[in-house]
Image 1 (spheres, rainbow, N blue to C red):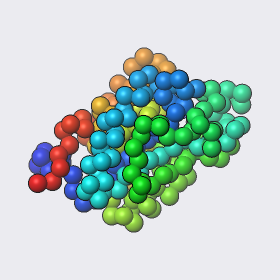
Image 2: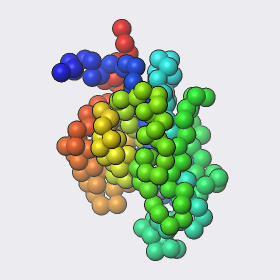
Image 3: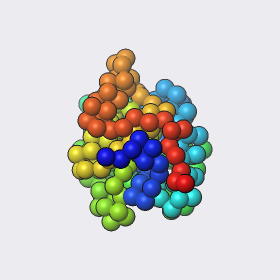
Image 4: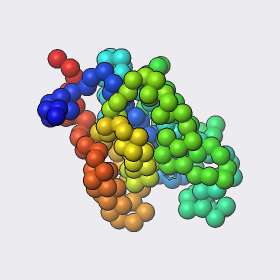
Length: 201
Ligand code: VGL
Ligand code: ZN
């Protein structure tokens, strides 16, 4: 059994997973997540720390074709958002992605949605090839893409730390974000704030 200190301390095999920090999910975007912009400085600090320790940084992005099935015009639940190649789909301008960050595009087929960064992508293969065993997950949105990425990560056998200060929820129904955090925790994700993460001695 690892001690709590070890659980909080970065080590080889750790990776930072930044979920969908894209303009359309920030205030002013077409599917704005309330206070979604607040995750950016927290994630930037973590990007710098992971990069300094030579640990992988992965950024997922919602990357929809123009007539995606999740859009209202096609009977889906969402306004058009994150159309591949448009400014709304670009990563937040303030997000300081390291040059070595791996970008994973998802939900890029017109007739299928994918909330998880693992769904229909090579994310698992890339992490496995890099020897990754623990995921530190932050980004947007808590109740959709973060939730589903964490569910899949746990099911695939990764140890998952949920960066509770670096996520924000859509909250279509009030409490969705809190319920998502509860579910992820119940499934085995470890909730931690970025300030609780320690560098190795
Ligand atoms: C997301 C709603 C629709 C997300 C993506 O990134 O959480 N939410 N598409
Ligand atoms: Zn989407």
